[in-house]
Image 1 (tube, rainbow, N blue to C red):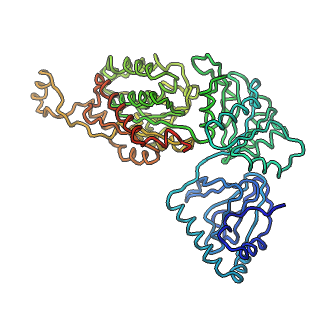
Image 2: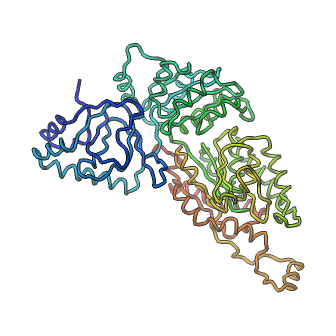
Image 3: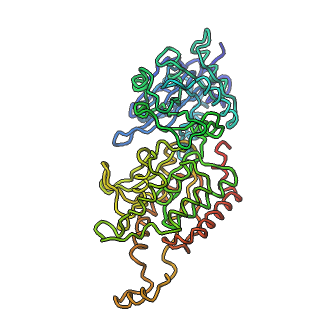
Length: 577
């Protein structure tokens, strides 16, 4: 058997390499075993020969953060050779792993024979630290996928072969696909098979059988296949609860009828399974299959639309420009007006349908003018409720064609609330509940108002999903109240009688602006999580200028076309480049 690959020795001369290799000791670690804990005194470096390990840290409150998932022939723990400082992270074997260990005593013996190795290792460590400080973080980028059927109906082997083809069409390298235990295959065989492919898919039909356990144990990302309305297979929930881990992401993939107007819901017990995202897959739909491949591999395109009153109509132009280059987002989210347009996209409507619905809802007749006794707000909100129910009534967030989220501000807890499931109209109503203008939304979690109060551009929420690059569209941070509003004779007379300047904004525009200005700084920080940001020049558009929807949309269209022409959107358009 050839000697294991150890890349960090590549810069040393042959004698020094032989001296290091001679002192490295093989170590076998079962899956789930912790190699070392954060804070422990370190005394050895490790190189992975087979298996996978996870690196994580804990903050001062004990909250864990996953840092990296390491595969052969990665090396870790090298700081322990040069310093007595405590371990900076915890490393756990995510599955049965074989490693080579070099202790500090052995390293010092090598230095005694080959003094130049000390400078070499010091430079290697400096390069590692420089990469950390330069912000090269490691996100969830799975290579090993497991497909399990949690209801009767779906065929894991068929989906696995289809997904392998989609991966190979979108991503570099070849995908290996295994649907049963190959005769005579042992750990070395599986490791060699994985090493020989850019990605590997394991497909298992039976729950908790030896092949199912082998497939699940090797997977970074598990796809749970389900039929709408079908109950879970016996033992599925208990098995998944037993094997769930912070290091293994699970998604529910729901088979849908090709002609379905809306996705059919899951059986409640299946919907309760531990899944990070629900992905709809229509039989024979190439677009859905490729979206699944992008979402599972971390190469999906996310679109986040910010709030900004009537300025949010600029999002219509953004969608039009992206549609012209055949670039449909894979997952979407937003705040306030941006949430409504993002939800329309997630409903599966095309750009023309979205424009028609939004124009009818907001531009044709102002939905925020049913004024009432201002006990809770200036308006009753009935026109908004009616408009939302007419367009999104009866729809749950998790049963949309595209993964969707929106945000509201929870006045009870003083925090941002992210809506990823539940009644869509209620979530949208909370996201646009401008304090003082629309009544708040009451729910078990608290009193909810416009998301723009705390996070008007939730690109950080989308980036935190780790599904791929995020394009954020900011329509809320441009200056407001720059132009003298046009006043009728009655308005001028009233202001003269009460001694109010003609340039003083009215109460409704003030409330609209106040709902977003408090989070402008937060929006800028959130935008830092985006791969690209579009900011149409909307300072000349009043926050309530619903009738100027065509002008707003045109400004959004121009900004997007400029971004496409200059290459600002290149990394978002092609996440694999």
